[in-house]
Length: 549
Ligand code: B12
Ligand code: SF4
Image (cartoon, rainbow, N blue to C red; front, top):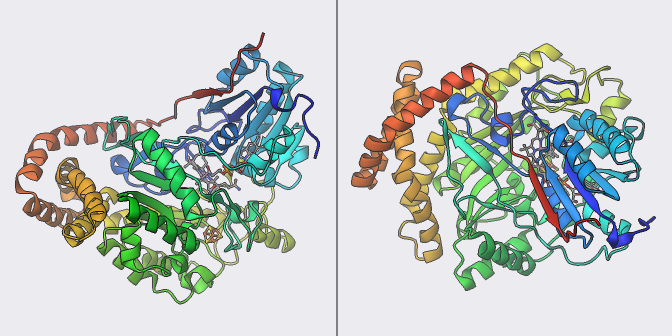
């Protein structure tokens, strides 16, 4: 492969695409596609009870950490900030990271680099690279498909097989709920750890699996439990965290690694909490006690309709599995696809109801979407079913179909999707309440468990439940009284149970903090009604940096 003439002396800028994001503009920002995980695709119908936070662009942070060249990361810039960075520092290489919806911004950023820093080599990476014919849409020198650390190392003439160093990543930023911004306390937010990219299950619609090789393939950054444990210890020491957001598409699938991690955690008394993504078939490889001892406290799991025949769900009673996990204090985030091939206007309501009946803590809904690079996209293209003239900025699964469905129209696709979010909220109530329910069950079951690591974890969680969360329950109960009596009564029952467990502190906080939280919730409702949106701050981080002379 060609290397850059300056090799590791080359000065590099790695940037994510520019904002603001939560607005409609000609570059592809969309008001329904904000830079917020939960509010965008999980709790968006939950009004002021929606969980709101931002996540950094981890791909470019990983690349920066693993090269020895002087490198700046610019995350969430405005166009102005990107232009300023290009003109105040000279860069030999400008790397732009984007996903498919952001192709219009990537195009504009390439144009800006050519104008403002004409000597720079432009490298574009991330999922945007999977668009067929992207070379003709953007003016870049290199378009990198798949894993970027090894590509960049090779391009700089460095050892592509050197061990992967993990950057220190605080998972969520500027978290807010019920109109309150949570304090940014060191160690108060989970750290992100990325053990691998890709997923060998190869579901036909899955873009992450396809991008890193497809069925049977994936890229492991940390092969063994020992390696993973070492990295987690470093992160724990530096960021003072006990909690990890494990960014691996199917963490539990790699059982040997997970079980070794558990062994080491036990030997060294680590009371960690892990939030993981896992498919039902992978979760079933573990007993509930193994999951609990491993610290699994949050699972993001696909709940596609069993009629669709995905192998990850075969032979699993997923509703029973969800119930069991919640009873063991594991919060479940379900993920359901709306508009699968077998869906029709006659059966889709029943299918959405069946998904909601899992009663997960959180529920993500996404439209069945052929995304460039996936087997599904290929199939739809061959069948001539892709709709013409759909802007890639609208292909994100939260708007309308980008293909001709056998039975459901493009307009109806959005109606069914919106209804799914609304119905989940109506039937199951705010996710914050459901989470409290799971936390209480976990505490009641494990408060006297022999392993002190497990007790310590549930004690940490229950501290929040017995204080601030109980005040939140008090507010939710009141807010729902008029609009949804059944949910209000269920919240009331839970609050009573919490107050029986913690009679003094829970009552005191509900009485003192409750009214303040009620006021901020109402204020937030008014702000949202007036169209308030949230944007992430801009970050600039330099590594191996020396100012250019
Ligand atoms: C965190 C995350 C987010 C965060 C934002 C992160 C950010 N700052 O941009 C939030 C939650 C806000 C988000 C939002 C959305 N996301 Co998102 N997100 C993710 C997630 C879960 C992790 C990304 C990650 O860090 N992965 C780990 C890193 C190491 O991998 P990576 O980013 O792919 O980077 C590697 C390579 O791609 C490459 N690379 C990346 N950049 C560059 C740059 C250069 C120069 C080079 C050489 C290489 C390179 O090298 C890296 C190391 O190998 C992925 C799923 C996943 N497992 O990746 C989805 C994912 C990226 N998101 C996706 C989507 C669709 C969205 C939304 C449109 C969804 C929606 N409707 O809500 C919105 C878009 C928001 C917007 N306005 O842009 C899709 C992208 C699909 C596609 N083909 O384009 C993914 C793959 C999820 C999925 N399976 O559908 N997302
Ligand atoms: S199991 Fe999940 S991550 Fe893996 S291929 Fe299927 S959808 Fe993608």
